[in-house]
Amino acid sequence: MTTSTRQTGRAVGAAVRAMAVFTLALGLLYPAVITAVGQLALPAQANGSIVRDASGAAVGSALIGQSFSDAEGSPLPRYFQTRPSAAGDAGYDGGASSGSNLGPENEELVAAIAERRAQIAELDQVSEDRVPADAVTASSSGLDPHISPAYAELQVARVARERGLPEERVREAVRAHTREPALGFLGEPVVDVLALNLALDGSKGV
Image (cartoon, rainbow, N blue to C red):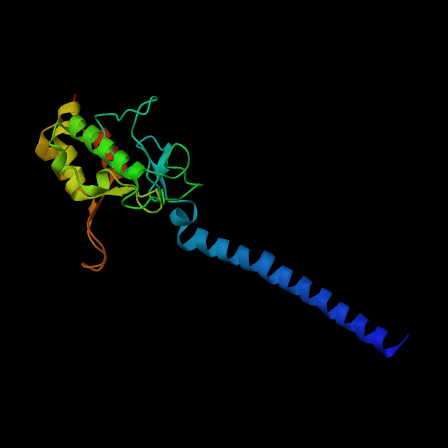
C-alpha cells in the first residue's frame, strides 16, 4: 500500500467519523435537548400556542389569525372580524404565510381595498371614511391574530346588537383583551380577536 493510499484512507476514515459524530450531536442530541427544554419550560408555546374553548376543544392558535365567517365566506355578524389574509388560496393558511406583495398603487389592490371598505361600512353601518386601514389590508404575514382598537371599536355596536349585550359590556371585553405596547412604547396597542370572541361566547346574552 502506497503512502498516498494510506493518507487517503485515513482522510476518508476521519471524514466518516466526523460525520457520524456531528450527525449524532447535531441531528439527534441537540434537537432532543431543545425539544425537552421547550416542553419543560414553555410547553404551550412549544406546542403551537393552542387556544381551547370552555369545553377544552382546540379552536385555534394565539399566533395565527382566522376568519369568523360562514361556509360561503360571509362574515358572522355576532363575531369581531379579523384582518384580511393573503396566506394561501383561502387565506389564514398557517403553512403558507405571506402577503399579497402588491404595491400601494397596484390597481388590483386598490380595487380590493375599496371593495372591502364598502363591505365593512355596510356590515357595521358606518361611513366608509371611518373604516381603519387594518380592516382592509392584510399584514405582511397574512396571519396577524390582532386588530387595532379602532377596528374593534367600529364593530362594538354590531356585536352588541347581535348578541343582545349592552355596548359598554362589549367595550369592557375589548379593553380586557387589548394588549398594550411592549415596555410601554414598542409597537401599538392590539386586540386579540380570538380570545375576545371566545370571551363573548361565554357571556350571557340573547
